[in-house]
Length: 413
Image 1 (tube, rainbow, N blue to C red):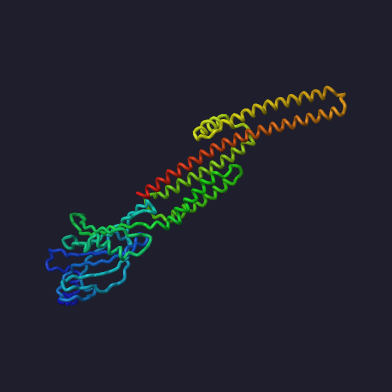
Image 2: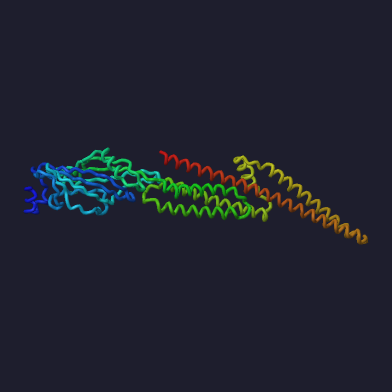
């Protein structure tokens, strides 16, 4: 107990590295056990620095402030560590001093969230002296990687993260022609994805499926447009939730890319529904479909999509020709009857009544022919709208399928 009494006599000795030969470095052994990961930044560990010599012949507890302690710190630490006060250390008979202390550390960690929520992160805890070089202090691990991994997994608390392994690495760093000894614990943790799958991925998939199904709602009326706008609003809420769940990182997660692409294609489908509604409105205002629209949509685009529009086009063309011919015939007949009525002013009242009835019938026939022509033109506009709608649907399915397969492959590998 001579060293302790000497320290009590001269407190300045507690700040001096206790060695028999000042040319020999003090050996500090570090052991770490990870207990929990809180929000990917908080680690709990146990440190056992060893190496202060003593001449005692028994294992006793001594006050922490009664002996010299190495200036060990964590390089990645960003805040002062929080830990309960442990006022004693253990002094063994061979002069080794052991200290066990639980510490909660806030440290920096480079995140790679590209595979979120199936991502795996690697964070380092590097222990070493701040002032003393390798000539004064040599830091060595007390246990190898397998021992640290087993002890950490046995004590690891259940949370949003699963502990994979802990790799123990010893290395020296150099700066300004000096070297410092360090021990690095590389911690591999894997995110538990079930919470994000239930609250984010599954609802997003159902919304995309419902939006695809809404493409089969009839084009007439505004039901499809209102329904699709409701789906987009719900999907936007999911994007806000995703933004709150994602940590800050320079890497964009593949899930975010998937949601962004789905949102863009949803908006494009809404624009398509608006355009189709406008074309159906043109069928009443402008009966004839423009020739360029017939060429590019009813012929070329319909041929690419394997949609048969030849029968509708031919029947509409024949109907237009027939209605034009019938309209001209009816017009001629009405004109002839009018002239006859004017020429024969001395006809009886019955004959005049029959002629008026004939004129009314001819006008009714003409009106029916014109209505038929409008219906045929409207059906042609409907066919144009149908072809464009199916083109957007196929593009929608192809885009969603490609990005979905890409996301699954990234998550799997």
